Image (cartoon, rainbow, N blue to C red):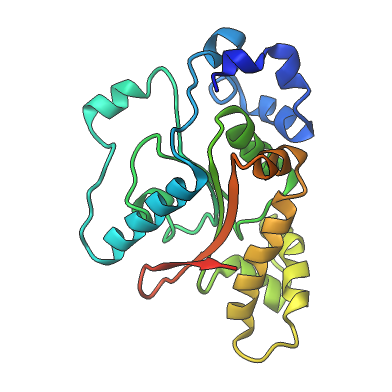
Length: 235
């Protein structure tokens, strides 16, 4: 469906919710949505299932050392000057070891990255996610945690941290609380619990729920293994 058919104009954008309104503060380079520009945006042709398979196939190439490095040519750079058509939105940790385009063997314009310590779905983060889901119409939304996450470890330890470093801890503590009495490694248990908890927060968005319920969007959780590079889905 073309954006022009959906009638997305300035008034439509301004009514998309408080999360999207927060994007205005990021400046015109991030928020270029105008009626004329929106017409050029074409949703991904992939189904949610196909989009997930494309990501997981890419991770298999990554772990098997058979990288294709797609969509990284000069032609691709020029193609993306007019519009972007990512097939997946990935909410992942800001950890330097977990870069979505690399671990999924994708390229420019393929993934709409939303990265923040602890892969937390705070209101500001949700604004970026809603932008991708509602306006770019990505068919897949993944919440990606990772092994030995420093943010989750900080929440498990719940100690005093300097400056603003500890601000993300509050967003992870509910997940830590859920698994505090479970046997096994506390941090590892909390990493998986946090993926599930942040998925719940993502699904509090009416925009996300509407697209999921219509079958246009799949929301999944996953975790990255630092030792092997493998990504497994969290059910």
